[in-house]
View 1 (cartoon, rainbow, N blue to C red):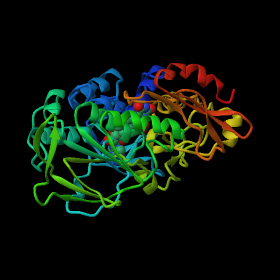
View 2 (view 1 turned 60 degrees about the vertical axis):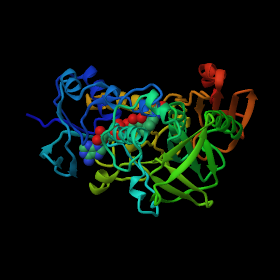
View 3 (view 1 turned 30 degrees about the vertical axis):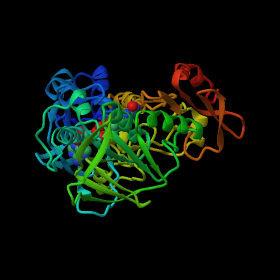
View 4 (view 1 turned 45 degrees about the vertical axis):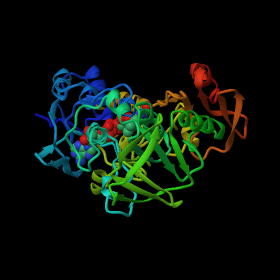
Length: 434
Ligand code: FAD
């Protein structure tokens, strides 16, 4: 029997490729190999789960075994692929060697880690998977429950326990999309939140300055404290137990913070938890070792094929050759667009559909439609379709809560909407490069 199609990774990219393939082809054997449990969950839900009082287990929408049975795939969970040999079309994993007819790399991205000083630098957490979120949740539960410095145990987190300990303190490194979403979620769930970022405001890379200022104000209204123009220098275990007295409602709570964070501006912050949200980097390790061309991600062509025949990539791992986030990949867009990663849900859906058709025998180029992103900051709802990096032009305010990014030829290249204006998303989308 011919070897199976092998997919590495059971995130949104891996599972969506399986689902789309099965719509076209029920018979070709598929082997899905993944380092995690393979349970299906919506990763965007990780950054608004606290306020909704959802535990990590409740975020799993379909257990791995059910996904595998429904889509008729063989699943090797908790299995890591170690080496790919593109010449012999084989791979080696922690559970043996396998041959493939086609290989799909859906290996996602890894959080960028900054080298920090301090004896508790290894306590800084990032959240890019359900497992990461479970550890974070456990840590928060611990912080809300007893304030000692171990990790693990603790009762399930709920809003009541969080508000009982409402002065527990989370410091977030990074005021980008993910940092702001967690800041909103933690603050709304009753935590003290401090955000540290070297830039001048939240989400400055994506938003016009005045929209960024609105977001800053809205989150400050929830109690979020901002340190802009600053970075985290060191994280240490608090030497004195980190006790701080905090006046609240005419009472004084004695709160133990376990970590002492020093910022580049000289500020010292006693905190319970440090979350790093400074960005992700495509996971290209396997691809690079196999000799595939990689830049910011695994380089793929319009059909999502890598530099090696029979090996494809999509999702956070891939660097797409055509189109740009927010613009249809028609001929004009292709010729002007730079290759780029697109670490969002909608591009994965488009890529998985095209790849499934190719795997089923009809080579198909991916076409990216306009893909505005809704930012999950309920304190100030935002929808943004930012221009591609490097697009010359400027943001212009069209009305309160409404901006357009205009290029030199007066073409609309992006838009941002806040508050009630987010309802105008479809109308604005039609104007981009119309
Ligand atoms: P991943 O989900 O990272 O999956 C990678 C898979 O590869 C994992 O199963 C991993 O175990 C496996 N793997 C890696 N290496 C190996 C190996 N060597 N062997 C075996 N298996 C391996 N996007 C939006 O559009 N809207 C949002 O609101 C939004 N919110 C977000 C909120 C958060 C907190 C985060 C972190 C991201 C958010 N995103 C959002 C981005 C979106 O969730 C991601 O783009 C998407 O989930 C990435 O899916 P993926 O399958 O490419 O990668």
